[in-house]
Length: 354
Ligand code: P6P
Image (cartoon, rainbow, N blue to C red; front, side):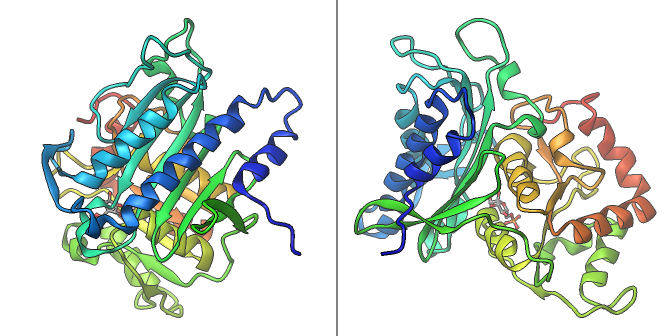
């Protein structure tokens, strides 16, 4: 019988490569996997238990929270607050840092997560996902602080996502490649299904909300025409696939090759930084892309090198095959000086984004 590799066993095997691993990192990834199984159970039967539909709460962005958002957010916090692995958490659904309750031990990691990304798709049965990132504690004292959370992606200890789609998959990296596990609901285990995912050289799709094209910068509009084979050397056009759930779009492109972009624009000149959240979406995705041989950029350079300045900071996200992302950066350099001048102060923390 082929070797059955559960995510727990895979994490343990990976930890063996860290001689001084205390196993606490392993426990943390276990708890995230367990959170995913609980959320998966609810997402697959959301329509049956009346959990669908928007709640009357709203998150920090003023977006109406779906009940499943709240369930996922609470599940991840409660599955991770007592394990003694974390000294703080942060969630896309909460304005501020989330401390570990005083009656539990603090640990040496912090967890940042988007509990249910793409939640506007919940009611129409389109894939949604959880995105998570783990940084090491760097501040003094027991409790985690913003300093522990606001670290550049280059320092990530791990990141990953769960996609709740035709099957439930958990994909993660601890800096030793990207590995995918598919949930076998009959045994309640994530089983290794995609070992060492590498972005294929052959690029297949581009993913972007073409409905925003009139707001895109000249460079990004030209880049899109290049992807379609209309501008430049008349390359074979890429297929256009856009689900509107970052995890689903990114997951497909990582397996099939291609590029996802949600660029910054000047539709509102005082908000040139696009829609994606650096700490809850973009950093984790860019880390995985790079671990799989791809690249994540904000249009000016590597997303992993950005020094964050606020928890809910937004950034443009251009991620996928390195050659495609670097082509987009070239178009921005050549045609988008006005946008670069507007965005750079936000990136270089001379201004803070809301
Ligand atoms: P739009 C979901 O709200 C999300 O953050 C990502 O999952 C997704 O890629 C993007 O926004 C979709 O945004 O403006 O195209 O609907």
